[in-house]
Length: 155
Image (tube, rainbow, N blue to C red):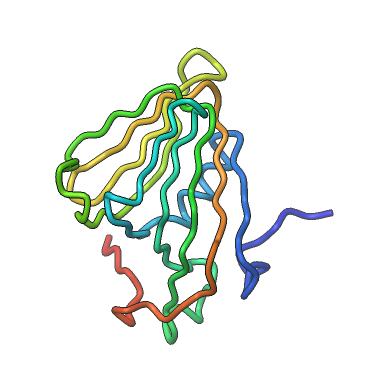
């Protein structure tokens, strides 16, 4: 048995989980450049769940993304969330479009810690979690990226 590879994804919808920092690194790469309106964030305090409905760029498409860039709607869910804080986000403007740069896990009193979603424009969301438990699931069919461009990250 071997580990899954990016190339194995193709047209199948993603349904991945993360239980440690290494797993979260994979999810972070997949949600890099995902965009969502601030109104698509939900924290169910009673259930300890924080969720985002994202329009994520399909990085797993490899070389095909250069000629036919695609996005897909996905749900990114974190369970065991005890608290949510944000910085640089206007909570009064629910239609503000946010873009994810990275998702990281900062270990606290093991297994607890903080998940930090770093956003473009110096924004961030910090989730205090009992333990890292994240899920990324595609919920629509892929569609042509409205910009018809692949996000560019010059070095």
